[in-house]
Image (tube, rainbow, N blue to C red; front, side, top):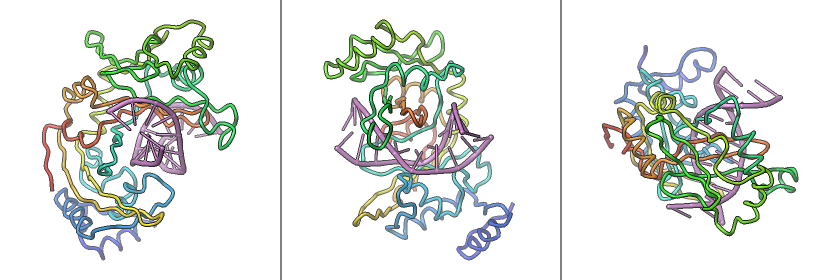
Length: 283
DNA sequence: GGTACCTGGAA
DNA sequence: GTTCCAGGTAC
């Protein structure tokens, strides 16, 4: 395993890499140094115009790494996450489709029976385009009546629907749901994630994490990033994770339209990622 | 080529 | 903070 730590060598390795060899490998301390160098460069132009993931992709370009493949030892145990400061948006932790998987419950049930007409149906998309987008937490129901329930006895978390909690603004939608489903009440089949499966997915992806909190500015239609706060987070905690769900800090995000199910995400409120870990370092 | 993942917003 | 939404890749 070779260690590369100069710009020139990185470039050479990258060129060689294009014809066959592996990426450069850093020690964790060297990766932190590289991240600090990038921070010290100041504002950096987005290199992936038109892609909303530009902030993360641009950082990956600067590190000369492939997506989701950190060039450090035990890279399978590490994740690189980039987040925009001050935009209030959620950070995606990982994706996981709910059980029972065989039912493909999102595209086969939630979207057709509980979805609504996509706002761009008839323009960008076909007239029949449906949408089911819900960001759901365990503390309050959404205005369409969905929430997360944690069942400690059965060791699973599940999605609940209460038509009595649907906001009046969605009255027409509720009526259409009743017509489509045939009756109204709790979901006949509640999507769920078993604790074991969930902890396995979360733990294997989030065990350790480099988390970069970046500032963003825009000049014209061009974005610039300042990769400012560098965190090293170690030892993902299942206990803290389930508690964060219970407290409404971690949410479940359904994200499907007819032509594209973006997948079901576990997401966390801004800047809260460190609370999921036993050890937090900042650089 | 379909499904489940990845990276994330804007209002 | 909530609601609704985006372009991509791995297999």
